[in-house]
Length: 151
Image (cartoon, rainbow, N blue to C red; front, side):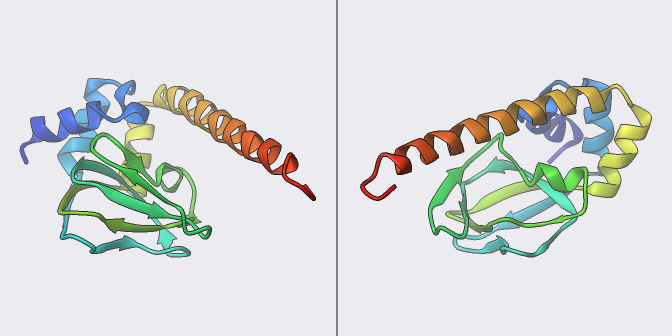
């Protein structure tokens, strides 16, 4: 993919869309590419997470400990917390079909944050919104479980 193709792929990713074209250009210039075949493993639960992935094409199944699989596709940022803090993978990630991903190493992302410190505020707002959304989803599950007999 060309530099412009990488920038366009990053622009389609909600968490990264608002960080600005120059910051995206810096990311896109040094970004890595990864291709997976059908049923190929991207990572497993508990693996060290030192990068995030942007899905350019294909679908990736994310399976947590519950076994429930959530399918994600183009424009999805997988593992965004790894861009900010050392962490481990909370789920397994497996290509449902052939997939093309952009790999954003934490070290590269930190360099972009140093060059463009205003991005930190934008990302903080996005991550807080995402965490609220996930909390609300968990709260709905809790309420559903509490209505079950014996709950």
